[in-house]
Every structure is written in structure tokens, then in C-alpha cells.
Image 1: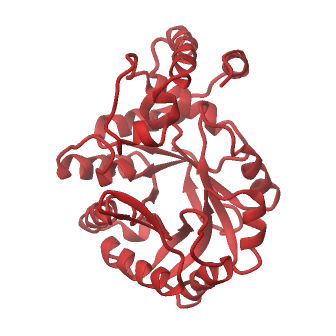
Image 2: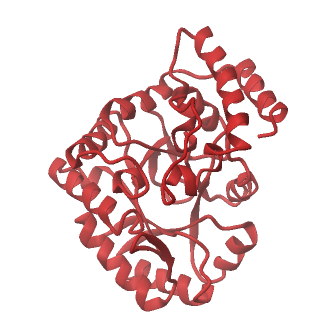
Image 3: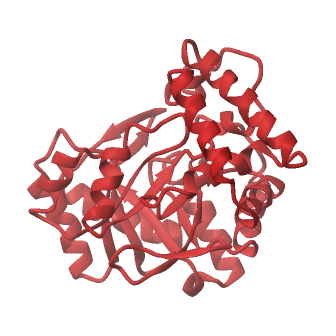
Length: 315
């Protein structure tokens, strides 16, 4: 595993972070809880020391599974916990709420779920439309001053929204979607890098599509994340992504059959503006596979080939 300093915070984080949206269960495949807990254990054993979750990941289920696993392992002091606020999962739907009282109560619930008395990284999940930035970010600063959270970040915010938020809170990092299939947030990531903020890129495997396991187009349930959130699981993105997988297949073959997931992780982590890349899995073997991506590095020629393919296929 490799590690980087997390912006100005002084924290040292692994370049891979386990994201637990899938472990929460809603919108993803269903696996036994013990299987999910084993994926968390495997990630830690491979050197991952940062774990990302949110109360919106199946109404706190992901937080509870993560908290219970880390408590049983006795490793709380050795890991960096990242969770979020301002977004809930209610009756199968995602609901935003940035009101002060809600933010404060949500943090307390996360502390209980995670079985800890402090949260290292606390993130505003989405820009809010029911409260002003002053109210929402002010509440987050209250939590920081109270010692319940250590550092504050923003997820899915534009540069203008980042600048506005900085008027009311200490913003140390951002979290945005980033992979070969989703590069629209590079503007925000480069801005963050220029201003000394750390960056967390989620969806580095494109919801699993960049692992190469999805080769036949199919229809998913309405709230399945592959249908609702990751646009390349449907046309016209699907055909473009399949062409990219073909290029990745060639690079894999030339390197003795390395998993495509490792190629996807390698590509993302070679960007200077990415501090840590989030991968999601519910399985031990896949956690280990993803971590092996840091055992080697794509060549400049490989990177150029992939970048050219992205342009050629209009991704």
C-alpha cells in the first residue's frame, strides 16, 4: 500500500479508500453481513487505513456494519473514518436536509453507528436546497469545535459552491466522482489541489463497469445504483464503455492478464490531483485484487493509449 499526506490536515491516508455504499446494501447486490464485514477486514489487512461511509447508505446500515467490524478488530485508533451529513435514505428514497438541528442530530447518530466518539472526516454529502450554506456549514463548524469531528469536507460541490462554503467553515478536502468514465469534476479537483485541499475520488471502478465483469447490457431495478446513478450502464454510454474495455483488455493481455480493475485504479492514481481513490466491494477477494493495483504502475505509453481512447470514443 502507498500513503499520501491528506492535504493540510497532516493525516497520512492510504491511496485506496474502501467506500461502503455497496456494503450498506440498498441499490446494490445483497450479500450476507459477514461477507461484507470480511471485505472490510481484508481491506485493512492490505493496508487500507481510510474508510468512507454515510448515513444515507441504506439508512445507517453501512455505518453500523463498518463500526461493528472495526470495533471487533480493535483498530479504531489505526483508521481514518469518513462519513457524511445532509442526506438521508427514507422509505427507499434519498432526501436532503441541511437544517442545523438535523445536521447535529445526524452526527450524533453516526457516532453511535460507528461506535466512536469522534469522526475524522465529516462531509456535506450534497449541496443543500432547504437551508443556507451559512446554516448548514455553521452547524458543521459547531461539531468541529465540540470535538465530534476533526476535519470538514464537501462532496459533489462546484468550485463556486466550494468558495461560498469556505466563507462559513474550514474546508480541508473534497469528494467527487472520478474515473475514466467520469472526468467532469477534474476542474474541482484541480482547484482543490491548487488551494492545498485533499481530494477523494469515488466510483473509481465506474460502479463495477471498469472491472470488465459487465459485458452484456441488461436492465436493472429502478433504484439500483447501476440504473439510477451510473449512466454508463445504459446507452449511449454503454457502447462507449465497452469499446474502452476492449482497449483495457489489450493492456491487460500485454501485462500477463492483470485484472482490469487494477488498470482502472492505476490510471486514476497517477493524477496528481487525486489523494485517495474510493473503491467499493462486498467481497474479500475483490478488496485484495483492488489493493494489488498499487503493486505496479501503468507506463506512460499505457496512459497515453487510454487517454487517446477516451477522446476517440467520446467518453
